Length: 168
Image (cartoon, rainbow, N blue to C red; front, side, top):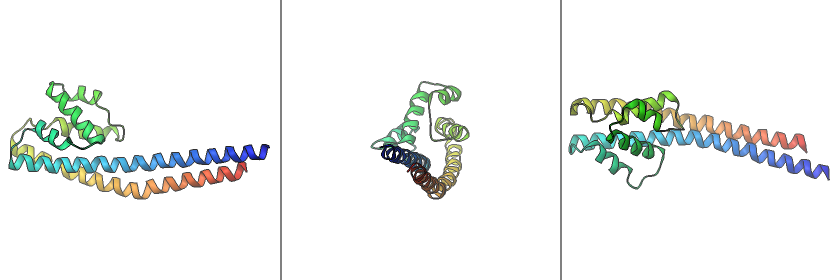
């Protein structure tokens, strides 16, 4: 009877380890998706500002229609708080970006909240600068997702198997 209970406990611990590996892999993937959406928004912003000279809140609203994700949520929150006239410090306290590091969060929020406060040429150069940064981060996050996300998942699966073998 105790052998069966140990086997069941080992199996449950193995499943928990596999789930932890899956969460780590998902975190890496979500970071890459966040930066992919940021690059798409910067591209949309460039084309809308160049061709139509559309106001930034309208660009953000058009971009967010039909999309659901962390970037779109952060974008809509930033636009709403910026409309109220909140400073960047207050916006950074209210808006949460769980997938990003503190430095990356500050950079994203300065991009989203700093738009629309300068001349068109300055704004286009600022958007191009951030788009290049976000593209580099997207590539790095995709590489990390492929390498590290898969590696951590496999390590957690192996750990789960090892725990199951030890308890069995």
